[in-house]
Structure formats: C-alpha cells, structure tokens
Length: 636
Ligand code: SF4
Image 1 (cartoon, rainbow, N blue to C red):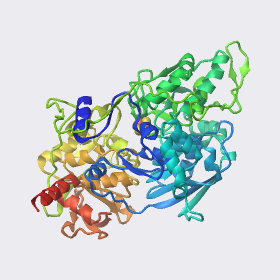
Image 2 (spheres, rainbow, N blue to C red):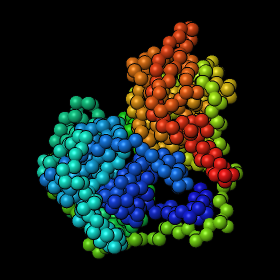
Image 3 (cartoon, rainbow, N blue to C red):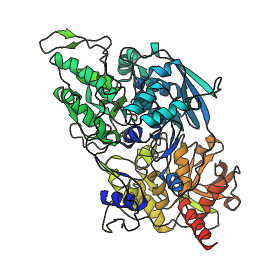
C-alpha cells in the first residue's frame, strides 16, 4: 500500500507524507494552510485550516480528481452563518466548548449549505490552534466550511511553524482577510465566552450538548453508564501543543497527589512534530506516569482502529474522547458503547475520576494518602516556548520528473485494485428497480460504508463493498444488515443482496430518511452502491458531500418532493424512475412504485443536478466524462 502511494506520488508530482507523519489536517495546519487561500480536501475535517483564515472545504475524492485534472470546482453558493464571539474563555472552558455549544444550537443539520464565519471581539482571545479545533468540528453541523478572520494569534502560529514571511504578507493584506465593516449574515448566533461552560456532547451524536453543570443529571435521567471504561485525547480536532499542555497540567496535578488514571487513557498526538515536541517538553512523560498510553501519530481509535479487548462487543459502556464524532460503533466497533466528546482537559479529568458523574469544577478527588483534593483549572502555553521540534523527517518530495516511475500495484493484492470504468447510461428510464434497503433513521456514511477494520480495503472496491450499508437499519425489520432479497427469495446481508441483484441484472435503489450520508466525506459510500449495481438513492434529504459523491459515480441522488412519500414505498416494492431522457436542471422526475400485491402508486422526486452533472450521469461517471473530454480535445 505504501509502495503504491509513494510511487503514485512520485510519478504525478505529489508529496507523500509517510506513515507516522500524523493526521493530515494537523500536517496541513503546520505546513500548508495560509490565510486567504482556498483549498479542497478529501475529508470532511478539511475545514480545520479555517483556524488559519483559509477557506478549506471537505469534498469527495472525485471532486479532488477534477481539480487535480485542472477542471473547475463548483458549489452552490452557500449561505453564511455568523457566530459572534465576545468575552474570553475562563476556568475549564476551552475552544472545544465553543463548537460543542454551537453544535447544540445548530444540530447536525444546521450548517448544511452554509459557511460558518466567526467574528467579534472574542476572536482575538482564542489561540490559532483553538480556532482550528472550532473550524474542524464545523463538519459535525454539516457546514460547508468554517473560518476565522486573520489576526495576531494566526501570525504567531505562522511564525512559530517557520512561516514568518507568510505572516508578514498576511499582515500586509490583513484588511482583506477580515469581514467587511457592517457585513451581513444570513443568521447570527452570539456566544459570550465569559459565561461559556465546559460541555460534554453525546452519546451517539455530536450535537446532544450538555453544559457540564447539567451533565450528571442528564446521565442519571437517561440511564447512560456513569462509569467510564476509557478516556482518549488527541485526533485532528484536539492535538495541538496547547491541548496537550493543558491536558498534561491536569494529569500533573493528579500525579502530585499520587493519583493515576482509573481507566485506560490513550493519547494520540496529531503529528510527528507534536509528538516530538511534547516528548521533549515532558508532557509525554506526565501522561505515561499518569497511566496513559501514547499511541502512534494517527487517527487510531478516532476512526475505529482500536482492537478493543477489554469490553465485549454488545456490552453497554461509556467512553469519553476529545474527538469530533461519536456515532454508534465509530470508535471501538461496539454499538453499545456510549461515546461522549469533550475538550482534552475535561477528558483527562474524567479519566482520573473514572466517572462521567465527576465535575472537576466542583468535585474532589481522593489522593493516595486519603486526602480530598480538587483540580485547579488547566493551564498551558499556546505555542512551545522552545519552538517546535520537527521530529523525524517523514516527508517524501516528488522527483523533478516522475515520468520514469512505475506505479506499484500488486495484482494479487487484497487491498489494492485498479478501478474499471462504470457503464454508461443506456438512454432509457430505469424500470422495475428493486429496493435494496429502505433505511430508517440516521444513515451516516459510517452506516453506509463502515470504517474500523474495513479501512484496509479502501483501495479495493470489490472487497470493501462487502460492508455496503451493513450499519443501516432496515425499516422492514428494524435490523441492521438483514434485507429481503427477491433474487434469492430470502433475507440476506445487504452486500449479498446487492450482489445477487447485480448477478440477476436487476437494478436496485436505496430509500432513506433525513440527512442521508452525513458524516465523513467517504467516497466509498458512493462507489460501493454503484459497483454493486445500484442506480439511485431516494431520500428525504441528503448531506451535501455525499449527494455530490453519488452524482460523480453516475448514481441518481433524488429527494422526495413530499417527504411523506417515504411512507408510500414498501421495502419489497419495485420502482421505475421515469423522465430520464428529459433530465434537466430543476426539473423533477416521476417514480412509479409497484407493491408485491400489484398495487401501484406514483410520487415526484427532485434532484440538484446542473447541466454539467447531468453529463456525469449520462457518461456513467464524472471520470468517464473527463476521459471523453480528454479524448475530444486530443482529436480536435
Ligand atoms: S478519523 Fe478522526 S482524527 Fe482522523 S481525520 Fe477523521 S476525525 Fe480526524
């Protein structure tokens, strides 16, 4: 795999950050993000770079392919939600609490189709990496991106990361990197940081916000397990020097009193630079002495790469992390794990207590010699006073000319498979498509294409397709990964049913609920249904990136014109999608359904295809269309 990445990078002039480099968003912040620039990245947490006044948007891989091929990137003009910050964070409150509060206000859908722009006098009271945390987790409210205006805190970070010249340039154009005087927003939220409490959000969704003072009551009321089974800090959201310094200041107080973490405490530094710097400055030592384990500089348990053996699958338990996502089974593959998110310093305090009912602002811990002691609010420098230690050099520069480089793909690999082009639209309506699954409730890209152990198949479409929709709940039986398959006449796992329909030459569709495809910008969630013979996804509403991803793979993402029509469709019905020859921007399509008893019905569906995107559908995929265009220009 790494040989493939290294050789593909070398051939096409792309720098390669070798394993152990860290999480890409942290690497971008440290090396590439610059005020006023625009970037697209193939991950939903790309907006992390908004902490450096950059318009950084998460997109599907196919969008990135377009841009790398020199095609323009397009997006329906987003609305702008203003978040006015006043005051400054106090006590245990951290930048994470700003976004946890915003998530509670806007919910996981509230930022859809909008850029979130922070402004107001409170902005200057946040560190640059703290602003990165806030922008990073804007993904959890569905925002197109989030960003802050350029300020002196960004200047300091740029200078500390070896980009003083860029900081001077940004100073020169500073006026252009801030909102205009009297700028107007589509809506405005105001947060007074003087009064902001630490928050704990969850379980199972990052927008279920609880101020710390009310959390113990929520815990008791809902019967969530109060005893913690693990605490985890790090991730692209919260692994800055400041985060680690503040968490270490909490752990150090415990050590002084002879106390260690009561539960497994895992620390993931966000980059090699952070790892080396916190090791040099003694924080790693504090974490280890306090019972922590410092993991590799990687996403690790944030994306399910956690071979957890201490809690049985299905056993109800609680964990707390400083990550951004807490959907069911995301971290440890156990759907019964109640995952909560908070700032690294609150996670550290909770880990010392071993209980979610602990409030470090008011409650005491017991020292080794039986005395009660309270933790003082965390402290920590925003930037390392001795400068950053770059650690090991893990970057591979591409050669000046990569023409001679062969891209390495082992034909016997179970992890890499070259993509074959998808078939073109046959020019006809879709007749009698089976309903592969009528998904009920939340269906994120984690439900559509699970992470964890499946990630090793990301380069092999056929193998990873065996996880298609295995997390989605079938409306027919309220069960995951069990759907009626007409092709075999029995209930099957979802991928098996998809393969059976494909073998029988029967097209199929997915029917879904609200905000279908929220979460990671995982392109496989669109590639897999296409690979297994899917033709359309009909839902009440889509998350933006997933909707575009489906279009790029030649699928039809459609929305019920009347959301109540979701109830008309039975999980064993056949659906025909009519009017495709006249597919045009803004023009709805008609779907005719036939229930098993022969009863028919129709309903209208909308789409957001523009003229160019209709070309993708007709060509079979955006890549096919690019190939067509390249062939045309070569023969012109
Ligand atoms: S898996 Fe977690 S740490 Fe990695 S990029 Fe995604 S959110 Fe960040």
